[in-house]
Length: 135
Image (cartoon, rainbow, N blue to C red):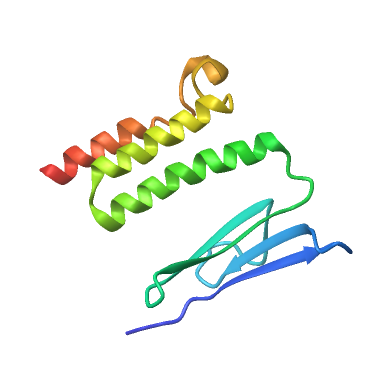
């Protein structure tokens, strides 16, 4: 039996068309009503044209530290998605390593992170996933 799910985004803009508020809601979400967020990246793949359409928005009072953390987590999320889609743990691990390098550069991991450790040990997670998929 098929069904349809819906995701709704609402963007409030100021007089200069800069986002001041972003909310989202999904028909399949547990919570009722719109949920606020500070930034979003929506990527849509056009398989026929072999190109991506992207909408990247953030509210005007989002600070750089939040954007750094957002991108750090987004890079790792892309690595996880890539692994699930391709079953290629080697490339997923490279993406995780890139994420850790990004995190170190912006001070989220390494010497700038909490006790010199990554926020998330996603490289080890990628290794674990590779071992599990090999079994």
